[in-house]
Length: 621
Image 1 (cartoon, rainbow, N blue to C red):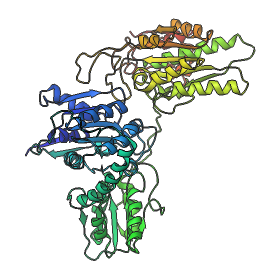
Image 2: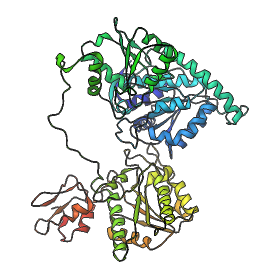
Image 3: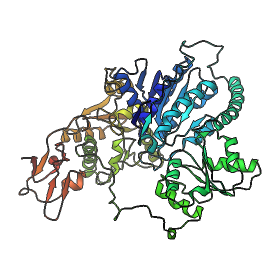
Image 4: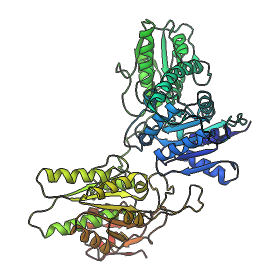
């Protein structure tokens, strides 16, 4: 068969198509996003004519939609990142009790580091908690093969299965051998009414819980026989062992290649839950100690400890719980090599080459809003409106800015400093209500209470918070930052754009009309690049009370550039640096003698021009 260079996410998508995937849904979130995007490309190219793909409003909706298709006998897949599983956890817990008719694979991409997430979460815990099988691939090649195996397991046991790639599996590349199509699923006959089988009554839940426990025991036996999920490298005279799984297995194998005594250690890959106890017991025979190498939490380590205790084995298990491995953060080959040396009795003095490093550390570069980002103008308009409002008061009124998940979280950075809270998607609107109530309960003057939310997040989980604000008569100003895309994860469409994942027309839902339908009467729409108008609109809302909304409408620079690059007239420039100190635009910099604009970064939004008291900023020559 042909070998193709694939990203891990592409491999998962093609592995699902090989398995006969018929429906895929999800919500964009790094590092999982490219899975659905790859499926959409295959559909558009005519290579997957019997496939339906959609970006759903949120992860919960995506899973509930997929459940309906799986009950109808199709092989379906849902994709999300680890925090998205928090949103989808309610239906997933119940779905495992009800079961499915077709195959259902839930791809949850974990993000050790975290590199682009609010939290480090280990989805293997969820698998244990929800009693759902979990596959943990260590490479794009394995992710491709495991996807097909996951569908088989799901159909065999009539239950959802989790595939848990991590960032380095999702975004690394490998030459993947494309295999022949798998046997077709047994389903495809549509939804069948079956004595309330898919209605989760308490009595049914109890009976199904009993069956779930039996299935887990059977699954552990199945996993012991899967060659690519669990295999061993034996050291003939070894008294030491290494247990690992997922991307940590790849790090371990690479680290061992460069170490002496690598052949004197026995290795076991644990790439699935429930753990294959038979394989584990075979691995542990004759060992004195085992080092467990895994991201993120001590899941394999805990299982080994339990197996040792249950079978009266005296093997010493070392890992996170014993302090031999880090408890947080992403692993690497260098880190694993460092931890393997003392375990194997090796030291730097043995002549082993040290891992190559940089001559000097890279400078710290915190993330910032892009030059020309409309969010910077929106934040600055609100900030200046509040400043002007308080300038005429003897006692300044507290302003609290509740943020949300998206590019606009970066509004927390100086000099803007416009994000005081950020919890999870959609939470800013609810957080603001709680803060406002608390200030009043404490006998304080009601704060100027702002909640910022993006257009994609508005549809994802912002609407319920707005309903609650209207229902409870909160005093809050909601700022919707509508930049016409899901910018943080790469520009995916959402319900407000009128486009589907494949780029075809879709129903366009108006944010303003949704707000009006909720009974909100104070709604203002402004272009944040019309800076004075935007500031005045925000200032006008400060004088009112109740739930009011300002919608800042300007496209992300990845969608449309606002203008042409600007430049600074050195003769007019007073070097006051207000353009730098107020805005923090990465296109503007200064040295001891001058202030300048980097034309390769400037998008011509003109915000800096509006704050320059010397009128020194204009069109580039």
